[in-house]
Image (tube, rainbow over all chains, first blue to last red; front, side, top):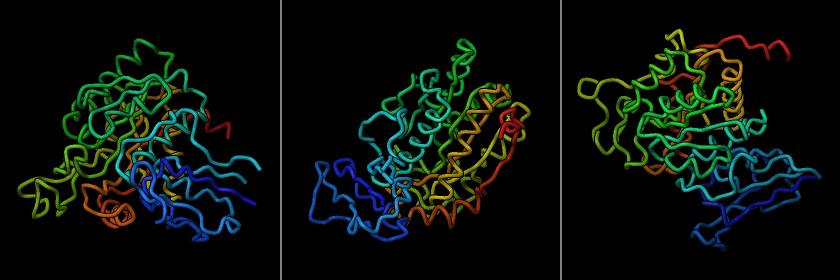
Length: 68
Length: 252
């Protein structure tokens, strides 16, 4: 059981977290715009998350917190 | 559940001004994580340089000083010598360290100053909009080399780690990259060792981090990471160029 939290107001939509996810469950949420004007990343299927923290390791803006 | 990954304490909770995908954010975080792990946040003085990192004093939770362009190693020398109980690091880009600040870094290294330098190499002048830097690769297109860097006209790129590793005052020199998760973990280990070398007063320590500049390279952040792996690592091979034995090695 793992949980990732995206702080979407800090996300710049750079997509670096997308490719490193081994489960490929991170996607850009085109329906949301944050205050900076970026479409933020988010998890599409949270139940599949294994808590590897690869996304958080790759994130340049400390958007992601991982719990396991 | 317990938290396995969160913002390190030594990195202030403040939005970074860097472009989307800029790996300065990753390198800032790695330095902050190392300060946390070594428990030296309150006894560390960082020296910010000029370039995109001019503002890094806004982000690190330790004491910070802003140095004139290229002079971070000279400022760090003064701080380290006058406050010998502090850990002192400089955070410099390639336009700062390898261009205007070459004299300062070479002499700080050869004097064996007990400081740690984090050298971020993205092969271009990022802040001033992508001119050729001393580290720009042969053939690389920049705003001042629109037909690619030509050795007969512009010379060859400087390999800073190799150059500084020839100096006796340098105790530790390693080149790392932040283009994927395994390399980021290696980069953190290298940064940690560079701080430990300073703590044991072995001499000058430098970690060169290959980084990206999506905005001025004219690529997406993902494409930039690929470009780094395919082109930069060929000219700038990763690895340890100089190392020294630490007493903490035996404790492992």
